[in-house]
Length: 507
Image (cartoon, rainbow, N blue to C red; front, side):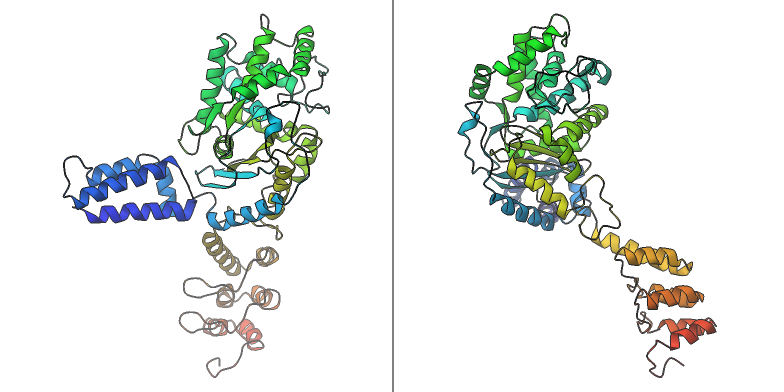
């Protein structure tokens, strides 16, 4: 028996939990299952019905080897994930106290959602997971399905063909307006008219049942094979109250906005079916993370969408995804997002994570009040805004930064600048909040190095501006003054004597 293999199993599990907070994932379920079988195998002298240590190890690690490697080397996109999620929880509770807004009533099924529902789920591109609130309560995507349908259409047909039928500009009108652009096309795929144009293109050579099956399967792939289903009562309810959408459809047909031979009623049904796809906050966060990850599901590694389709989708979500609040959202939050009248918002932080927020009460523009507030508070705390300065912003934190690596790089850069008498770099580091007095492995600081090289300009900057102590000793007990004297830099030594505490060793 190889008991160390068993301990390595538990070590891997601990690393996954500590470094990624992946909870309730397929990986951990599989891990616990095979670890239990291996333990039984060890205790029962490896009966023929039990797994060997090699089989158990292979079955555990086969789920996602990349995830394991990143866990063991602390290389997740959010290194301090538990600290990050504790701040996410703080924002969640701040927004829970908001009670403004009204639940949508124009689709009868939507009006039955409790206004108290409030959930936030996060999934990073590495599969790190966190959820809080009513994250297991199912709801329909509604307009949250629009970017998915558009991405699938571009993935299948290409951008040029799709945009023969739909534009790329914000409409400046309500999402359900009967209005076309100057080219007699819907303005963009994120409003009802544009979504109808997109759904008319998607797999339009198939039967309606097969078209919806395709959409649902693709959505489930984006969601990591988690809870993605269909809510027939919402579909029937939406179809029964669809006078406005039918008016938009006939208006578009009159203006020849659809491909030839398209059945309008079938297109409308397909659109309503897509809007009635049912998810939970948790599964929708994986969908969002797949888009953030370039179309590759972070929990399964399944490549669902092309890079072009994801890029185009994110561009339109950024400019048109939040109804008539899109411009203000881009200004304040600076991230691609798509809202739906069920109260959900899919928020994408490209190359970092996907977030799903769900709270049914809406503002007068049709966006979830709590979700919008959460997004604004998120970027006020973290520099996720597309135009945040990642190096010189002292009011926000960057959860992507690896603190240890950052400190090591900062120390090395400061020492190298001192070696080259580069006071401009030292000034930039000082102004960005860097600690110029930190030492390396041997406790030698930038001041030690500047003194050793005889760079008076760097020495004076480090003491007078950087507030570095000239009394700091390295591992051999030497102060910067000792180095200046040893290497014959008399001018630097005289300068340092003005600031160094004399203790009998300094002469």
